[in-house]
Length: 496
Ligand SMILES: *Cc1c(COP(=O)(O)O)cnc(C)c1O
Image (cartoon, rainbow, N blue to C red; front, side, top):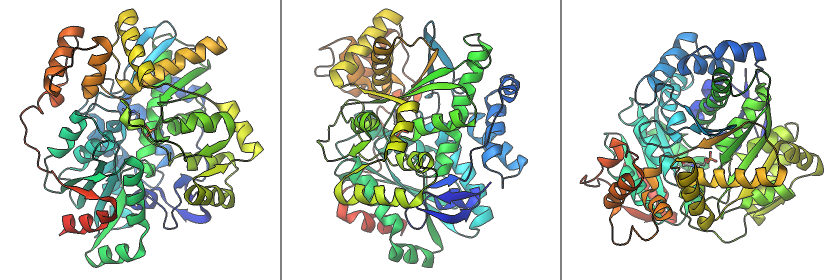
């Protein structure tokens, strides 16, 4: 299977090249030329396998230039240890017909681990095939969770360096501590004055700058990406949607062939795009429901076909979704337009020049058929956390709560009773203040982050994962903060 670019269809590369480079030279994103199919018989068969077995089946359909041994060792390296659930991505029944897919059992307690525990292994194999003798420099822009998960995945991985930029006022105190205390000899972390979109645009600019690439080349280095623009981030995410369907079969929540809905709290559109790929592969899905916080650019887009990032940016209690430019939408537009690279170039051009674009009627009709969308502000998010805890004895984090609230609205409006999987993307202790404020208003007053963890534990009876509790008392290693214009300089300083 070959991969092509969303902005130049004449480009054809192997999966190793797509993963090693991260982004195509002209700025497009790599996508497989066709979507591999999986039959219901296959799904029933792999239902009997564990997560590692399921992952090997799915990945081998996409990474066709990896040997079976390579895929096996990558997948084992990622999922055999480090996850606190034997099932890796378990389902929790919220109410009859509604399953929560818990994607945060990994080392950093956010769903990014599902991909970022695997990506360093994939990247190491990919670069040994397509770019041997090069040291890979991973540049990351993060709204909080990617940074930590990438640092943890890449720390001390041979022949790699990792540099993370995060918005100084755009991450939770726990997220910040997780990153600034990161250990490892090949890691660097820097805050920037600006929001996530500034960090992401800055990183993208450095990536595609030819002069920068030449300077790196001299050092025997090359850039790659651990953001979800890298196909190696997306492909591991397809696995858990197939796996969730398998688990629903196994627990008798559905029969083979039954459709499910999938609800995803969305920022950069990577997670929900993986669900779309699973659907196109053959997993029976009815609606993909895209949930946003107050930064509801995607809700408007999916309801109108008009994408407009020219709007106020809100810093919310679900910071990993505080995004106005959802990069992975580009891949969806490429697929829905019948792989029309010229159209994608035109739309992405007007997004970067005018901050907006309109899709054509054909693409809009497909969007409407596939997706539903809704949004929920901070008040609604807190109310949903409190309600879900009171009524279902389930404590969810702020991002997951956005999805639960949007799903409740969807169900009320449509009356759709299709069995549904809600993606749960972080452990609630990662966003302790907001979650505590939701379940016990006023209690967090005057408390520090770790008092709040304790408070939340006492009030809810839930346990804080040790990797978060243990941050107490650690001294930050990385305290720098730069202007967005200075990011390139910071990169070269860190690479010295
Ligand atoms: C990254 C993240 C999201 C958004 O996922 P996308 O793939 O960017 O849409 C949602 N919730 C949490 C907790 C995250 O870390």
